[in-house]
Every structure is written in C-alpha cells, then in structure tokens.
Image (cartoon, rainbow, N blue to C red; front, side, top):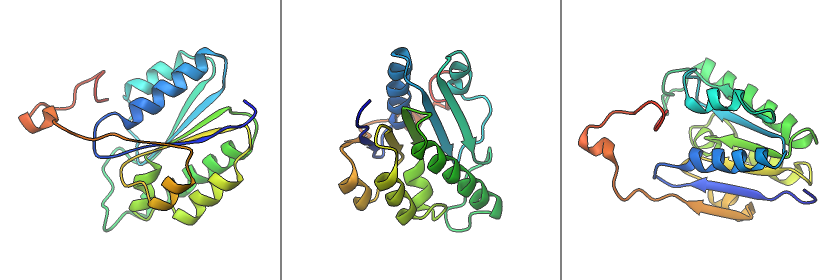
Length: 173
C-alpha cells in the first residue's frame, strides 16, 4: 500500500476485535503482512490465536494477564505488559515489515491509564506511511477519533449475556 490509513472500531457492542480480525484475514489473503497486538489479553485459548498460526502472514501477540485488569488499581504487571506491548506496537508500526498493524483493545488500555493517549497519538502521526493502523476497543478518545480516517461504532442493541448465556468457545473466544 502506498498510504496506509487509520481505522478505529469502538463502541459498547460485540464485534470490534472480530471486525479487526476480519480486516486482517482479508489482507493476509492478498499477501499483506499483518500483526495484531492484543492489550489486556493473556488467555491462551482464544480461537484467533489458533487460526493465526495457520496463516503465513498473520501474527498475534498478547500483552496482558489472563485475568481482568482492575480499572482503578491496575497491577504493576498489567502496566508493565501494556508498556511492553506498546513498545512492540511502536516498532511494528514504524517498520516496513508489516502492512497492517492492529492494536486490539488499545482504547481500553488508554482509558485505564495503562498507555498514554499522547503516545498513541504520536504513533498515529509517526507510523510508517504505508502501514494501515487499526485501533480497537471501547472508549475511543475524541482526539483519536479526530485523527482517524475511518471510525466505526459498534452499538449494542441486545446481548445474549443478558439471558445468562456464558461465553462460548469459537464464538466469544
């Protein structure tokens, strides 16, 4: 790609990560090199991890613990992993090794104070020209929305969790 754009998938509905994965899957099908860096996720049995291993040009790296992050009191390990993930994201977005760089749940990491908004804005501004950058997660800050080329809001209308249906293998994870 001559000029990569910045995409954001945000909102309170289900499907933000799935949309980014779909974009990455489509890109890999055309021979583009994709990396997804997952913030605040450390669960080893996500289906996308298994699927990405089957694809030549699609890598997923996780920078999080398998437990939820306490929004008001994130652990030192949560902060350290987010910092490590962001440094990896910075390297990936500035190199020309990847065509698509997906920062999964980066908006939440910013909202929780694990990553500074100013750093993400700097990354958006200084990414390699050819890199398509995709940011996911609830709570996208207005400054990132303004800096993006495409913003999609996923709105929850109804969710099966309300009926007590637990997360299902192959669907939610």
